[in-house]
Length: 305
Image 1 (spheres, rainbow, N blue to C red):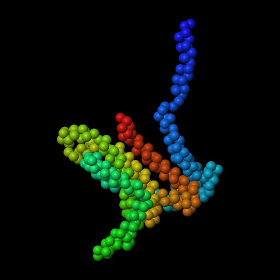
Image 2: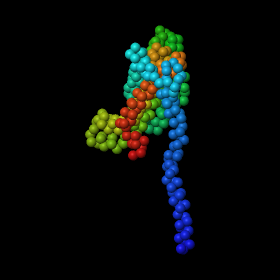
Image 3: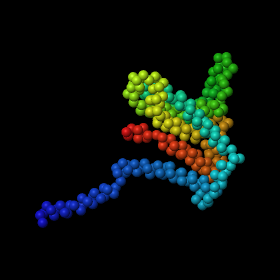
Image 4: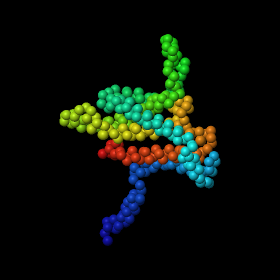
């Protein structure tokens, strides 16, 4: 046998072995994402499992994984329980916040995409900058501004008026604080959605004689809807779990569902009940999220096609 053929036969097993090892290894992208996946598993899945386990524990106990009861869920769905009033308040605040922000944020998003030009970056910074300040600090700033003998009340009295309006610690003030707090979370996905609308389609519709209202209704709004829906969903999820606005601006005149959960885990020391409430809210938000994502073309939204 020639020497070259013998050398080839000796090299073949090592080549096949290297190829087999490469085929068994996950793809490079999967290996790169593995640390993030492990972090998310430890930081999200593990606490979620603990919450679910606690929701089936004996009320007012810490017998997690050692007892099983549906008493916590039965208490939540009991018609005499006022927790559903808290859930209703949270839902109403979240829906109203989404509705108001959809109206307020759209003109700003349209301007950032079509009108502001080189000033768009500055406008974006102005809306992002408050996020670098603690939400509680900003909300307490509102309290100092609207409280009796505060900035607004004292300034009006100084110039001869009777004082400022008594709007602090009311549901309307809570809603105003939520609109102010969550504006960026509606604005930027909406701006992304509008940026995805091809300008050629708008020009073509205009050339075919469509009015400005028709262009908005038939071209801009449907194509920008994925970004708008994501902004609405994000705002709703944040709004239904909001608690700082109700506690600081509302003075606990209205109890929201997140406050009930906090009370169950702290003052009441009833972790199983708090866990059951958290599971119910998580399921509700999860079903809503899946329903919205089922109507979105995420590949197009993320620029994959």
